Image (cartoon, rainbow, N blue to C red; front, side, top):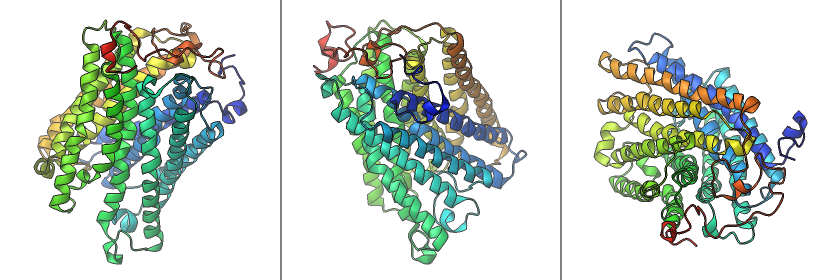
Length: 533
C-alpha cells in the first residue's frame, strides 16, 4: 500500500509520523507562505514602476518589504528544500524506513506552523517596518510596529529548524542501509547533513538574539541601545553570525539537488565525487567565519574588515569547485534537456552570477560604494531566488513522479523553466545597474533617471510570476489525470528509485540493493568518481 492510501482522513494526515506525509504537510504550508510573500513583492514592484510614490505611502512600503523578507527567508527559503525534499528523500536515499525520531518530526511541523501563523498575525495586524534584519536600536526602541510578536514567531520557528537538523544528523549516522558507507551517500544527503549541522549550531544564536531584542524593547534592558549602555553593533555581530550561515542553509541543499539532477540527465557519473563532498563541508565550515563582511561600513575596525574580506574570498573556492565539477560532469555527456535539467542549469548560471558579484561586495573599497544599494538586493536574489528557488523547482520536477506516482506535462514544464529563468534575469539584472549608479534600496520613490531600469525590473517580475504560477496549475492537473509513473522514470541511480512510485508506507517492500559506487551511470569510467569507491 502506498503512503498516500494509508489513511485518507484529515486526522490521519495531521497525526501522521510518516516522513513522506510530513514532507507533504510542509510543502502545502510553504506554498502558502511563498505566494503571500510573492504578493508583497508584487506590490513592491508595482510601486517602483514609477518614480513617484503613487501606490502606497512610505510607512506601508516599509512594511511591505519587511513582510516580503521575513516571510520568504524564515517561512519559505530556510525550510523549503530541507523540510520538504529532505524529509521525503533522506530515509529513501539511505535505505531507511523512516527518520530516527518520527514523532519529533511531526512536532517540528507543528512548531513551524505555530511560529509561521504568529509571524503572519503580526504582519497583518499592523506590520513591521524595520526590514527583515531588525537592526537595533530602531527595532528595539523606536519602531511602532509589532516587532516583539514577529520576533516571537521567528523564535518559535527556529526550534522547528533545530529539531529537523537534529533528526537528519542522527538518521544519517544511525540508519544507513547495511553496506552504505559515507562515500557511497548521494551528494544530496551530504548537503542536507552539512545543512543540519549549521541548523543545530547557528539557530540558537538567532534565538538568543531575538530574545535580547524583545527584552530591550519590552523592559528597556540595555543590550543594544547606546542610551541604556548597550552596543548596536553587537546586534549586527549576533544577527549575521547566524544569518550568513543561514545563506548556506538555503544554498547547500540546492547544491545537493543539482548534484543529483546533472549526472542523471547528462548520463555521466558526477565528476570528483570526494571533492564535491569535501567542498560541501568546506562551505559549511567557512560560512561561520565570514559574517563581518556585512559590516564593512558599520564601524568595525579596518583589521577586522580585512580578515573578513579575505575569508569571504576564501569561501568562494569550494563553491567554485562545485561549479567546475558540474561543468566537467556535463562534458561529453548525453545531455537531455528535460525540465529538471533546465532548472539545474538555470541554477548553475544564476548562482555563478550571484557568486561573482558577491566578490565585488567582499572587496572593501567597492563595498563602500555598493553597500545599501540595489546591487546588494540583486546579489542576494541571484543567490537566494536564482539559486535556491530554481533548485527547489528542479527538485519538485525531478522527484514529483516519486512523490505522487504521476507524470507532469513535459512541454509546459519546460516553458515554465524558461519563463522563470528569463523573468528572473529581466527582474534582477537591471537592479545591478541601478545599484552601480547609486540607487539606494528600501526607498519607495526615486529620481526620474532610474525609471527605465525600474520599469524593466517590474515588467520582468510579471514574467517571473507567470513562470511560478504555471507549475502550480500543471502539478495540480497531473494529480488528476497525469500519466502513471514507474519506479524509475528518469533511469536514475539512487536507492529511492528502487521502490515503487509513490513509495509504500515503510519505503521498501524488499531491502534495497546498495550499489558499489554512487552515480554509476557509466561503470567503465572509474576516474569520474574522483577516488570514490
